[in-house]
Amino acid sequence: MLANESETHKIPCLPCVLYSEDLNIGFAPEPLPEQRRMSSMILLCLSLALSIQSGALQPVPVQPPQVLHAEGSTAVLQCPLQSGKIQNYHVFWFQQKPSKSPAFILKHSNNGQIERSSSFDARFVPIRDAVTNAYILQIQKVKTDESATYFCLAEGNYFQIAVSGSGTRLIITGGQSAKVPSSVIILSDVSQKPESPDVHALCIVEDFYPGLLEIKWSAAGKDITEGVTSGQVTLNEDGTYTTSSILNVSRNFFNSATPFQCSVSHESSGAKIERHLEWCM
Image 1 (cartoon, one colour):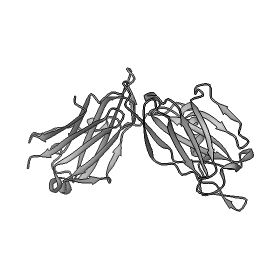
Image 2 (image 1 turned 30 degrees about the horizontal axis):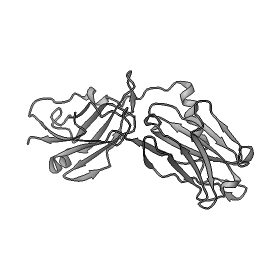
Image 3 (image 1 turned 120 degrees about the horizontal axis):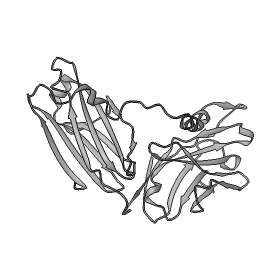
Image 4 (image 1 turned 90 degrees about the vertical axis):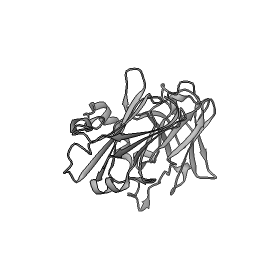
């Protein structure tokens, strides 16, 4: 498959294109093991960004949604505080890869002490920038494998205050280990139940690495955000990932706005792939 390609799929006027059970691909909720559930709760239980402590607002970490860095460079992750002063709080950094629980990287105490997980080496360097009132995490000689979402969490002494940012997706580009998706498939149930008022379309992306990837839907050149459900990102046995996205629109809208398009962007590998869906009237 080429890194940049476009393809149109015309749905034949046949009794069935996609069975309803096929729409469950990537969307059946899998019960998490108890340890994963507890790890995920670490951030959720501590993310009370607007609660009040002793009459003052808690600090609010504001993380940018995404940053890109080339493999081998120094990646910089910013975590400015919207309220509160960074010198008054400890900061924790977590890394979360797709299909994994958050992993503790380090704690940078307000006295300057650093407590580091044994899973992360000295390339992960915490910095406090008083000028911008921001916590910073530098990752020196960053690797493709370190593409992930990074969370910062500010905490007062004695667990009085603990607030997590929304996370920054770190995308590493230019690495030789990055892998273009092996296939992008678009399907629909438009001909399965002609009397149904709704139409579903499914976009499946297989065998890409690393696991950060974006799927967008559009119709007649306009982005669609409503009626979109993202599937789980699944780790394959060979270390690659598979994911999917489902679109639910009214039949009237589907008939009036074709062609529909699924656009896949995998920036680590440079892949930009499009699939089009048209219905024969």
